Length: 174
Image (cartoon, rainbow, N blue to C red; front, side):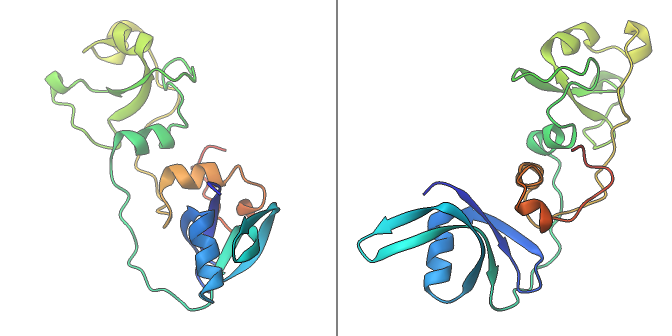
């Protein structure tokens, strides 16, 4: 029952990702309806329940537009967990300042990139042209702000059922 469920507002806008247990409670209380279900069932003393994959709330929930915060996790997600210098996808990733801090580089969307330790050590606190390195793509603030977290959104884009409900943005790596 630790599967994740996409929660949609009554207008089919993605709101959240919750646990299957929470989704079953929403359905049981009449607050949501199941749009897509897994093949598996949950067996409880109360009976059998289908494990939902996507649920839609019965009433509209008004939420303010969320602000995409700058953090390690969102930088990694924006760069698709790939080193922006060599293209490696490894578990041992760091954050690198394109313009080093000692040269006035700020912690901004346009100056931070995902980087493997090898490239980070090679670049050190120098400019890219000094070490002969190039960025694979220029870093920038994402133009989209999904209600669900950026990491959950990127994982959800890989789910065939969820993909039908998640908006597509041109500057998102697939």
